[in-house]
Image 1 (cartoon, one colour):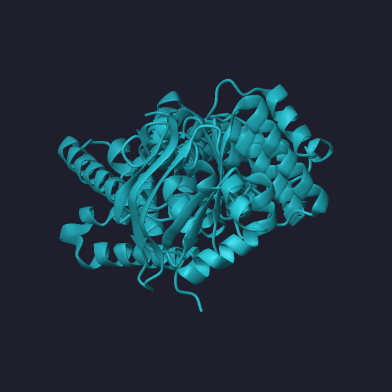
Image 2: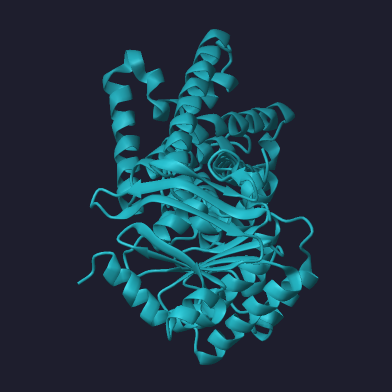
Length: 250
Length: 241
C-alpha cells in the first residue's frame, strides 16, 4: 500500500495538534477524578466501601465506554472525513502519490490508535487512582482483569467508529452525521433492550462484552460468536465506507 | 518528444449540464501550457480529473505515460498541483504544513522545505500558523507545497489568485526559472489573459465545456495584436454573440 506510512504519520501528527485531543484527555482525567472523589466521599462519609482498587477501573470503564470514548471517537471520525471535505483540505492528501485506499486506511488506523490510546490512558489513570486510594485491596489477578477489560473494550467501540466513518462518507454535513450517530447509538441501545434475542446484532449492546471475559465462568461460545458478529460488521462498515470514499468527487 | 500529458476523450457532465466534453489534448515536456477560458467553461473540472480528484464519465488522462485512473501513484509521482484553491491545515505552521507534504517524498528534507519557503518569500513566517495568513500568503504556501518535491509537471489552477503585483511578478519569474533551469512542464489555467500571454508557450481555449483551439503563443501573436483579441475571436467563432 504505497504512501500508507506517510499518510498514517500525517494523520497522527494532525491528531496531536488538534484541541480535541487535549479536551479528550482533560475529560478523561476529570471522569477518573470525579469517580474517585465520589467513591472516597461515600467511603469516609457513610463508612461504606463501594469499590476496591481493582474494581474502580472497571466502574470507570462502564461509564467511560458509553460516554466520553464513543463521543470523541465520533468527533474524530467526523473531523477526519466531513471536516476535511468541507474545508477542502482532503485534496491536500489526495493529490499526493498515495492511493485512496492508502488514505482511507491511514485515517481508520489513526481512529483505532486514538481509541487504543484513550483506553490505555484511562486505564492507567484509574488503576493509579484505585491503587492510591485503596492500596490494600490490590492484587495481580485484579490488575490482569482490568487490563483484559480495557483491551477487549477496543473492538466494539472501533466497530461503532467504523459505522460513523461510513455515515461520514454517506452524508456531506458533519453536524448531520453527528446527530445521526447519536440517534443510531440510542436507537441500537433501545432496540437491544426491546429485541433482546437479537441484541448481539446491535453493536452498542456489545460495549459491555468485556464482562464476558472477566466473569467467573467464561462462556467461550458466546465470546466467539460476538467476535464473529463484530468482525463481520466491522469489515462491512469498512468496505462500504471505502467504496463511498473512493467514488467521492472532491 | 515524450508527452507530459495525454488526454483522450475526457468527458464529465454534471447534472446541471455543465462540465467538459470530449477533451483531447497532449502537452509536450517543457511546455508552459495555458488553459484559457471564461468562468464556468470547464477548466477546473478538467484539472480536477487530471489530478484524480473527480472521476470522468469516460476518457483517460496519462501523465508521463501512466494513467491517472488506473495507476494513480505512478502518475502523480512527479506532479505538483494547486487545484481550485491553495489549501493548508490552518492549525499548523507553514513549516509543519510543508513537513506534512514532505512525508510523501522521502528525499525532501528540512533544507528543501526552507528552500521552498525562501523561494516563495515565506521563510520569515515559517513558524506562524497558516490560519493567520492572508490570501496571498496562503497562495504562496500552496506554491511552496506544489514545488516541494521538485516535480516534472506542475498543474496550477489560477495560480495568481490573491497575489499582489509583486507576487504575480515573482510567480511569473518562478515559472520561467523552473522551465529554463529544471525543464519543468506547466499546465496553467487562468482567466487573466495578459499573464497567460506573458507566461505560456502554448495555449488551449476552452469554451462551453469544449476545447475550441490549441495554438502556440508565438503563432497567435503573429496573427493577432494581443492574446485577448485571439481569445475574443475564438469565443465569437464558437457561438458567443
